Length: 389
Image 1 (cartoon, rainbow, N blue to C red):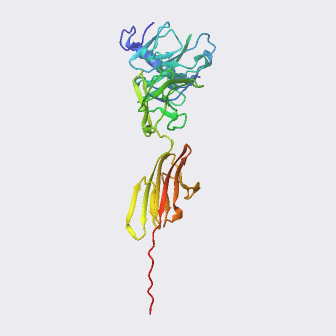
Image 2: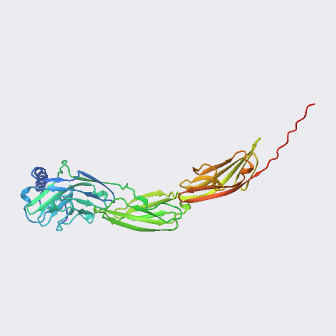
Image 3: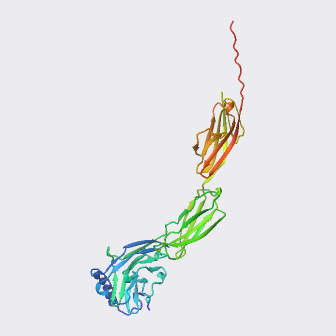
């Protein structure tokens, strides 16, 4: 068995003979295209480094050769003008590098072993093939050849145009896909999944996580789709705390066969029930515009009769809580949604005294804070009226 021959290297035939072979090779494909030989495949395909691509392909050949007995062999060659391939045992040469075939007698290019797969059956006129773990050196033009007995034919044109199949290999730009299988809630275990780019059956990628969470576990998953493609995934499970809010969770995917790497990050947006309720008290005394008091966490709130009292209640929660002020289990303010809500008691009266409760509620729970309001009686000066004599 011989390996691909390079031009002018140990050739047993002369240059004129070589030129005759080249002309016969080119002319045969061009003329026979109109005599029942046709190949249907994409004119060009593109694949990112480290990923894979499947090239659908079908062909027909002249009716007289369809009744010939024996195995129909199919060969995909990468067109390399500086190389010639020697066929054993038929002792003939074709130009290029053999990358995949169903003819186990013929050695394929070393760099293509295990990465190029003939997915179609030439006996069924199917010449489909795939490239896994794509490398930059896979870029180039490819052509298909069939042989059975005296049938030897090379397709050098496709159905759409007079051009061979062209493969383009680009840098890896596709990002991993990250999603969570359950809601992100503080204090509840959550699982996040990362799916590697591509769906290949080549060398499995390596998937890793970067997180600031101190307690987590990871596991690798992979499954085959009905289309025979593969999905490679990793899941991470952890118990999020409020300290994880806004922190980055990064999935990194490496393709060891080619050294390509891709990663994606998400920032945790955790839901949690309302908490950290705080109150700020503002008191405005009539006739004293400069005597405004502001104090945080004041309890009880002591005001004189006639003062205007504002108590601002603030709470943190996600989703934003619905807030309201209650007195003796009755709502005394209109409920609104947000992170702050104000209790306004203008010209406060003695009957306004009592306990007020600020409630903050979202779908995850309820949090409240109670303050006590004391109203002091303000003595009023009597007006003296002089009698006129």
